[in-house]
Length: 194
Image (cartoon, rainbow, N blue to C red; front, side, top):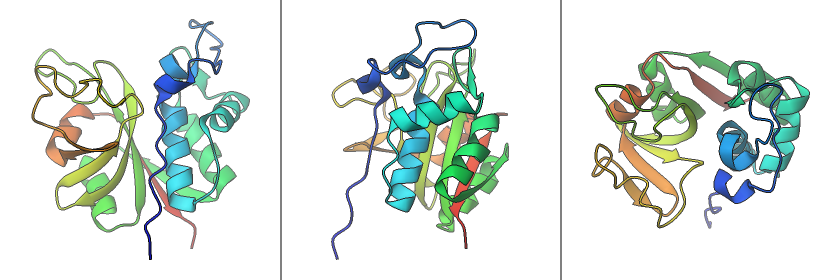
């Protein structure tokens, strides 16, 4: 049986899709504010084998009032999105709960990274950013980063170099690094209804 290829969305490919903010970023688009939108699209398409592109995800996020100044409020959007596509969701700030959920193969996680801190360079972003934690093999986690573009050198900068192993659009990192990136930030755990 052939494995279905991963559906990956890079938000940088969606500068042409408006994502206007009710406050602040009036000229917002998915390229500069769409990480959560692309992350939810990847979760839906890869977990459920349905078509749910970023344009559709953005419309749903705006319709439910989750679009905020510089991104998407996933506390608002996650339950609306999950119900819309037929998933269950809960959130936690406990990274170990998120890791065990992945290790048990129960579903996928969208994590909210903090970005750079005085003592640490953010592994997946220099500011707040949503990434998909697609699976875990022991403590190694497969990440789909909506800001990743092949050849960008995104993980080669000082502070990130050597911490991510790329396999196409799969960015593998040790969960200890991800957990430090997401310290006191939410993880949204998505699973299929039984």
